[in-house]
Amino acid sequence: MTGIHLSVFRDADLNCDCTLNGVSRQHNRLTLVGPDISGPFEPTEDAPAVKIVRRKLRGKDGGFIEYMHLEPIDAKYNGGRWLMFGGNVAYTSDSRFPSDYPFKIHDRFEGGQ
Image (cartoon, rainbow, N blue to C red; front, side, top):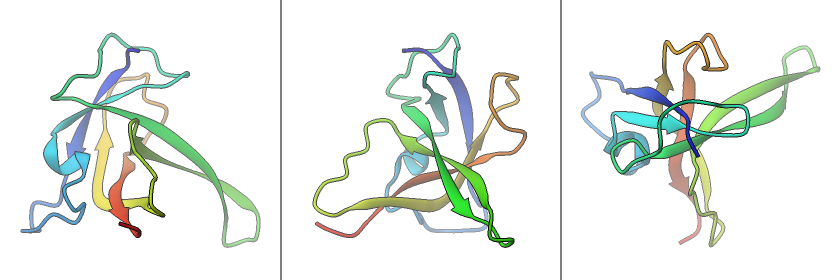
């Protein structure tokens, strides 16, 4: 499983971690992997794997829009927990990145035990 490296961007003015110790707090680089992503880099401890999650959300006009975000590939949804946006984004200038804008990183666990 190979992919492309992404840089993690955080708000430099915040003096806290809104991810509750999520992957984007712990690392400055992530490795984007998935069926539509080809790249030369293997995920490592310093650049763990993330995947794109695509969802359809209802837009203001009542139609549906595609919303894409990143999640850790090894996220465990047990005990009624879910992932949400923790305040950080990731991006790369690599032309294989499937977007012209940074993706939000959903790496903050909420709910459950």
